[in-house]
Amino acid sequence: MRGLRRLSLASVAMVWGRVPCRLNSRGGQPPAPLGARILTNPEDVFQHNMWDHVKWSEEEKEKARQKADDNSSLRIPLEEQGKYDIDACKYWDSFYETHQDKFFKDRKWLFLEFPELLPLGLESSATEERPCGLRAPCPEPGVSGREKETGQQRQHAPSHQHIDPLTSDCQQSCNQDGRDTAGAARQTSSFPGEHATFRIFEVGCGAGNSVYPIVSSIKDTGAFLYCCDFSPRAVQLVKDHPDYDQSVCHAFVQDVCDEVGSFPFPPLSLDVILLVFVLSSIHPERVQGVVTRLSQFLKPGGILLFRDYGRYDLSQLRFKKGRCLSENFYSRGDGTCVYFFTKDEVHSLFSNAGLEEIQNLEDRRLQVNRGKKVVMRRVWMQSKFKKPQPLAPPL
Image (tube, rainbow, N blue to C red):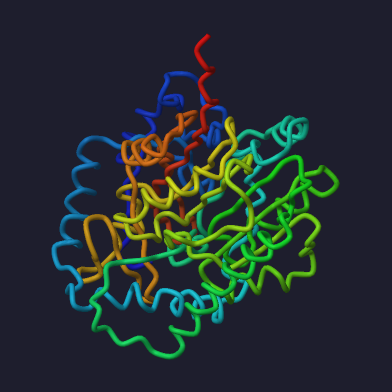
């Protein structure tokens, strides 16, 4: 917990005194309230591990901005940045080799914040009797337990960089898996889940912490889940899980940054795309292309669900100098990378892909270590965007 700033009760009082009711960008109550545990008495700050709907003062925003400016003032040299592209698969495979499926908890909160994941008729049961204070959980206590499942990361790399055999084999596995899956679908004029009445696609599935809460909820509903990851080892962990069922789930290795990569389903076939802590791991120059390509697979009326890191989250402010790759984009010690979004960036990202905003929220909270009496400021983005229906032809 080094480097965490202890907040005085007076500072906390300033925070809760400015807490408004959370509104969406259109001024109404959001479909998902992101929790209802509001700190009304600063003396109670250590009574719970998390407080919702926290608003920062202008002074606090400026301090955070200055901290981010400071830790990004010394950047990783350009000649060294290539390895974060070339060795991306190796970094992710090493991560899952070390942690297996033990690093993250299953995301059982998904249906509370994203009831759209369930076929029509099951959504209401997922959100009925929502207890006060129940909300999408944050990373495990201590930012080292980061909520970053896995993703696809590509950066501009010098052509002279050496590619070691492990990296080459890993990338070859990713490419071959995608070709085999797509090729089989073309040869048989069919695809996995073709008879499903409701199709979900999770990008960056990691070891399956979203997969299995979804699978257990959609069995016998006519729904089908696709899930992919850049890491072959992560996908194998998903397939090795005792609950993996090919009748309701198809896991495959895919680099979504590959502009010519094929998917095991046709365009306009998906009802939901789930992007949870994955776009932040992709180089910001590539993210727009990824979102635009993915949006082509949504049906008209289909929805894209997004949750990821927000600008000036504690995990951004804790980076040391020399870990910054570009503005608000950093490399961790294990070689994985992370970007921190703003609300405006999220809106532009999905709107430029032709999607309509339903919800676009900045989720600010106080995360509390009650044992050490430390209060931490967390920031996440949570959004929902819909593919519009085609315009009716003129009469």
